Amino acid sequence: MKVLVLGGGVSVAYYLARAGHEVQLVDRQCGPALETSFGNAGEVSPGYSAPWAGPGVPIKAIKWMLMQHSPLVIWPILDPAMWRWGAMMLANCTHKAYALNKSRMVPIAEYSRDCLKALRAETAIAYDDREQGTLQLFRTQQQLDSIGDDVAVLKQYGVPFEVLDRDGFCKVEPALRLTQEKFVGALRLPGDETGDCFKFTCRLAEMATALGVKFRWNTRIEALQVGGGAITGVHTDAGLLRADRVVLALGSHSPQLLAPVGVRIPVYPVKGYSITVPITDAQYAPESTIMDETHKVAVTRLGDRIRVGIQKRNVRVLDPPEDIDHRTWCFSHQFGKFRIIQSAQNAITFPIRQPVRDTAAQVTFLKNEIPFSMRTRERRDAPTESAAISPGHFNQ
Ligand SMILES: Cc1cc2nc3c(=O)[nH]c(=O)nc-3n(C[C@H](O)[C@H](O)[C@H](O)COP(=O)(O)OP(=O)(O)OC[C@H]3O[C@@H](n4cnc5c(N)ncnc54)[C@H](O)[C@@H]3O)c2cc1C
Image (cartoon, protein in one colour):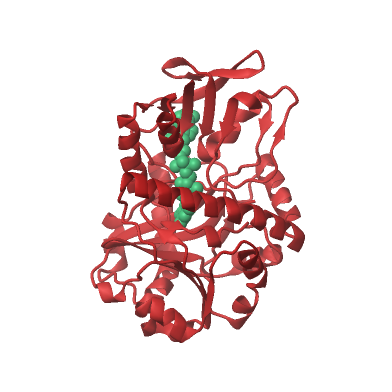
């Protein structure tokens, strides 16, 4: 069968080619994993997968927005899609919806982690990967006491976990000894992994090429072609490409392409940031991922580097007109927020020896949009049989 993979579906392309299909992947970038997958926080954390919409989140969101170093920024823009999405998110902030959404996410995430293990065994792919679990750190007893819902779901799905006191978390992350008094306890998910998504995707793209996948880089997808109730191809700036099946993996750009064919997915872009710096003193570096629950900062060991991912939930819709402005905005924003990172720095004596501004050259900039999703709606005549949709991160 002729299959077109649109956007970031390198793994899909690899599996389809291995199953004997004729596969082409089309992407506007000049290579794999250059957008959201470029510099993410590096966690492969099925146990930690949880909907952003949770009980108490509306109140927390207001508090976050009032914090000096807020992990949430909402630009008050008149975009109906944003407000529609916001309303759906609020409707999912109940105990019942949270438990249901989480109970759907965890098994999918566990399954996908198991697929990753199998793929790693099959391909011997290396991507600064580690299988040492992840650690979620709590600064207050209240945070620690509120993990009940999460723990219940972990138990329900047999996901291993440990609730650790200071001694316990210092055993798994010895660098935390230096600042252990800042934290009251931690939730450890020993089955979680870490790794460099960009490295992984690039290596897998090479392997997919060897299996016969044709990559069409620098090609912008403009519209889906529909005929006889099915998607029969895609219009691109390089002309029409035909296929028997289409896999849509355009991240947060997926809704724009799907809407004209009658499929509405409530995926909305938000922004996150990361920096990547070399380790200068390994004894102070984390072994795996630590997450500071208060500041929503994740610090991950990637070989001889550390990546700090800030889950700043910056909900917005329009990119500033020029990319360079966008970058400048992000950097200054990042520097403005550097105390967030410095709190991680304090937490583990984060090994940046240079003054903060000197690290600018080492900043891995991330133009990023994490889509999140709730209920999909299709028009009756929508050609859903011929397309699979994989728009990335799912946070219901
Ligand atoms: C700061 C940050 C930290 C994160 N940390 C983690 C983490 O620790 N663990 C985790 O699991 N996830 C994390 N994520 C989320 C994760 O990175 C994303 O879910 C994942 O990278 C999405 O991959 P994707 O292939 O679906 O999308 P992308 O990597 O964004 O790929 C989409 C592709 O579609 C292409 N495209 C879009 N529109 C068009 C068009 N019209 N024509 C042609 N091509 C097009 C783009 O060029 C792009 O290559 C993080 C995200 C951020 C922002």
